[in-house]
Image 1 (cartoon, rainbow, N blue to C red):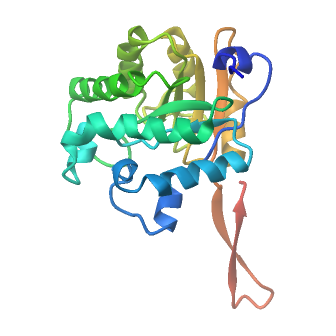
Image 2 (cartoon, rainbow, N blue to C red):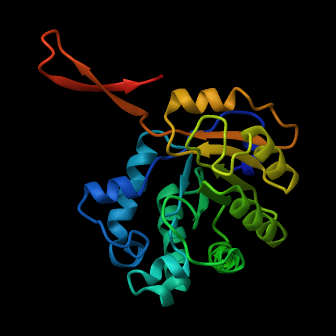
Length: 254
């Protein structure tokens, strides 16, 4: 069975994506260079993909969020970019088979952690990674995720769009519902991304479902792009018991 192109499928139905990779690697005691585990611990990566598929995922992403040269350099693996990225694609496609969509994941460089690279250098390294991902011929699209800095995201998208006709998904991360880290209304940022050629615009981490829905309520349904939402498990709040002596955690939807 040949799967229909991703965008054609999205025109007919909702698709359920997988979840975090790093969180589960941490839970399994693998807490150094997650992307290098594509080479050193492929069975563990495959097991995580398999678990998401068994849970009903229609889309899985490659374990390549930080598989760029400067990110791998922290662990001494900067010369493994060409091996790490195709290895991740091979693992994902092998587990996904022919029916499930596989997206090549590219993570942001600017964000909660300081990045000393210039924007031009970030774009250059992103292009290098994207080429190695796309050369496999096994992907259904590219996923740009957890971009706090819209300037970085638009620069990367502008550089990647001429590189491939495959769908590109662009996911922004917000600290505040409806407002980007750069202080722009989310609807304005999404509109710009659509104009630059994004096929899917959306949000992922760190907002939970409540704040993500609140943010997306401001967004129109674009004629030429789809919406995506990948919330985290939401925020936590303290609640005391009747005598005020004990506390428990609960989901905070306010």
